[in-house]
Structure formats: C-alpha cells, structure tokens
Length: 220
Image 1 (tube, one colour):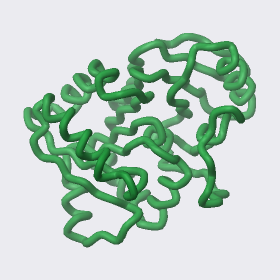
Image 2 (tube, helix red, strand yellow):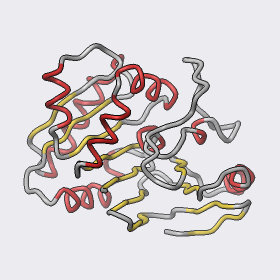
Image 3 (cartoon, helix red, strand yellow):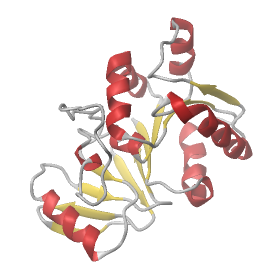
C-alpha cells in the first residue's frame, strides 16, 4: 500500500513531498488523475496543478469530477492511472460526493491493486478511518453544509490526520483534548509537511506532531 498525505500549502511549499511522490511511483513518466473536492472551481485548480507538476516529468494528466455524472470510460481512465490525487477543499462535501458517486470502494480497490493515492488537506483526511478532524477544533473546522452525519471515510490507515497544523499552544491543547476520545494516534501536519505510507512503514516529512491519550509529541 502506498499513500501520501500532504499537510497543505502552495505547490512550492511541497517540493520535498513532490520528489518523494516521484520515487513512490517507480516510473519515469507516471500518469496522474486529479479529483477536486468540487467541480465549481475544480478546473481552475487543475490548470494550476498541471502547470506545477509538469516540472516533475508528469506528462499524462486526467481531470475527474465526482460531484457530476461521469461515463464508464472516464471512470476506467481515472482508475488506470498510476496516481490518484485527492484535492483539498471542504471535507464534508467531498466525502458526500465520493459516496454518492460510488467512488469510496473504487478508491480502496485502486490502493489494494497497487495504485498510489495522495491527499492534500481534505483529501488526506478522507484516507483515514473518519473525517472527525474536519470538525475540530471549534475555531478551525469545515462547514458541514451537506448535513453529513456519518463520518466514516476510506479507512486505509490506523491514524487520524489534521492538516494545516500550526505549532501554537492553542492547537496543541485542542488536539490533545480531542485525542483523549479516539482509539488512533492523530498526526498534526503543517503546510509543507506530510506523511508517507509505504506498505507498513510511516515516514514523516516536516515538523509533524503526534497526539494520543491527551499527550502530544514531535514525530517529524
């Protein structure tokens, strides 16, 4: 299993992670499918995505929306890519769209067959057991405008993920308290940082903090 979690930030902030992305594919010119959280602004974001990743020898890009109807041919093209990249955005809206489109199980199958799944911010949260961290802490959370009540996500790893983590007492205290109520470790990942899952090995990039049982500790 190969997964890559991006904590967030502009493309230029993630140079180290982008280089790791190339290594994980083990291909010279890998194909990549970009899935936006929302089609409303997805095409503009995809244009920026392509402009950046062309510098890393990606030559085969595919744009795939999940909140709009798609054909079986487009689905087949998306799932045959070497890499699928889940964008940032509103985590609740994104998960709701994945469920309605039937993509949750298809993404899990993609990973099981050896595909590399990446997630930026919200996209990374979706790869964990649930999307609880999209709703905590109270001062930094996504609006749940779709009224989602079931927070179960792809459940590909045994940890939770908090993107855009800031190294302040406010964030550390809030996430420490939240960690008392969960059964998995939680990793707070700042912009420019990330987590690589390569089979059963975890690699932390940047100043990543772990939270578990009310305690916090630096892991990366």
